[in-house]
Each structure stands twice: as structure tokens, then as C-alpha cells.
Image (cartoon, rainbow, N blue to C red; front, top):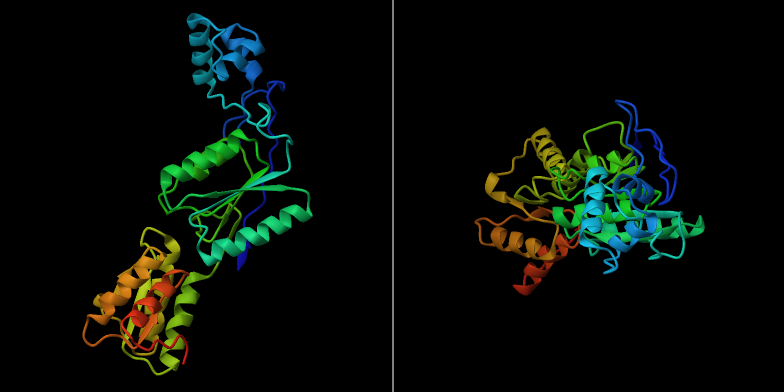
Length: 298
């Protein structure tokens, strides 16, 4: 794996902290507004703002409306740490992944957790399930908790959560699914090379009738791996018909569906490239379900 891009850091004040001037034009991020800012703009006390935030009935409608307008105006996000939802502030890292059942992400979570514990940090893990709305909600939750940094793998190339993270000047590292920017620290595989290695391995085993199960095409790593696979085949004078390429979603069921499609074609492939567990398990399961021998590596 390779890492690239400069590290970033930025402290944010807890609720009740002093207000600093807005960032200069072109500056990265900005300071989070505090509960004192809301109170000042609404012309009320901090305790009144707190009562509005907790839904207390001890606030009249006119005052509540002024506070809510002030909150909307400065886009204030309550600090959950300050509200007592956590007993310890600081030293918290957020980790957001598309699917915890995937072996790659499960392993990463275990390693990140061990690393954090050894250094006195807590780790908050979020599973987006590949859903953009869940990804956005979890990132917003982490920002409200004033985490020290966020590690995340985007649900797809269309994800825009990095814009939110940068807006609040939160240090971030992207894993697995690269962003086409050099200023964001990123840890990813060389997926083009991985695809080429898969093709070369199958060819070396003597396979010429091949099939490929890819990840979703809206994820760059899936496109890069597919391109690498095709390039290696061309280099060795082999080809891959479009009908032998099945777009999966990295999940078990899509592996089974790909295997069904290949087995019902004629002739069916003798070698299949399929990345990212549990999708390969789905391919093997479908073969076994039909009573067919499946050699993972001959």
C-alpha cells in the first residue's frame, strides 16, 4: 500500500470557547461556532439556548424561535461531548467504512482499534452499508462529537462528504477508495496492478476462457482493477468478451449471481477473477451448490 499527501491538523473549540475571526479567504476550514455565539446573536443566556436544544418546555415560543434562527444562521452543531453524552473529551478518532462484513474493512477496524488503544485514543466506528445518506449522517455525527480526526472509505466516487470534513477543518485520511487529489492523505492499493496480477496468474495456470466479476463501476478502484485486468490480457494476446464481465457489488449474493450468469453461458469460463470477500465466497458457493468442483488455486 502507498500513502500520499501532507497531514493536516486543526483544533476546534469546545462549546463555551471564545469566538475567533473567520478564516481568511482561501483558508482550509473554519472554526466551529459555539453555544455562546448562538446566545449572543439571539440575545439570550447560554442556559436558555441549552434549554432550547434539549427541548425544555420552560422557553416561550418567541424566544425559542429567536434561538432557532440564530442556530440556523451560523449553522451551529451542538457538541455532544459537552452535553454529557460522553464522559471523556478529546482523543477520539472516527472510522467510517462501507461494509463491516467485508474482510478488508473488518481487518482494518481491528488494526485501527488496537493502534488507537495503544496510544490512548477511542475509536468510533460507523458502517454506512454503502448508502450515501448514512455516510453523510455519520460524518455529521462525528463532527458534532468534535473528533480529533476521521478515517473513511467513500461509498462511491459521487460521495461529497470530504467537502463537509474540510469545511470544519477536521484532519482526514481516505482508505481503500482513492480521491483524485494529492492534498488528501490516502492509503490505497495499486488496483490497476492488482488486476494485472490476477490476469497473469490465471493465464499462467493455463486458463484462456476467462470471466471477471468487478465491483460497482461508480467506484474508481473497480474501474482501475478492470482496466489492469484487460491490459494484462492484451499484453499476452488474450481477450475478454463483454458477456464475460459481470458488475457486482462486493457482496455475497452478487458473487452467486455472477457465477450463475457465467455457468449458463457457453462455453462457461474455466478461470474467474473476483476481488473482495465475501463476493468470491458467493462464486464458490454457487459452483458447490450445483455439485461442481471449484479449485480456488490449482
